[in-house]
Length: 132
Image 1: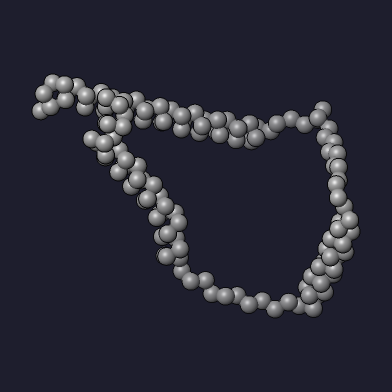
Image 2: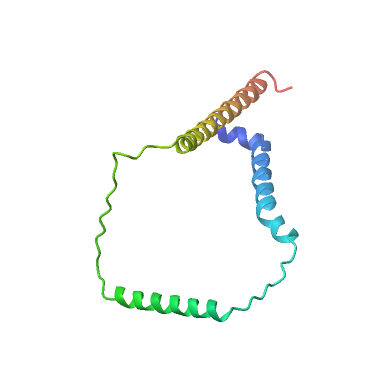
């Protein structure tokens, strides 16, 4: 019996996955937008010093953009001193956690696959024995 026939006869795994995805979507996307309290608009006034600093920054950015208008292609050379750099313990722990997460997800997927196969074989045995 193929897996498609098994799914046609037993739709509960699809309903379960659909409910899981729908619940996750509603829980993380819809409800926070519906239930979040309204945020009061905060109006700030700029002081003269802040206004002057912002205007000078915008002027310098505009000058920089004008300088880059004529650039067609640019090459950047990065140099890193590799002799003194070592991976910190925190970085190694982060890498180990990410590898463990990937392995955990793979293990869960393999377990789910074997469960679906076992359900399919169990259904096939019941039909061959008379289908009580």
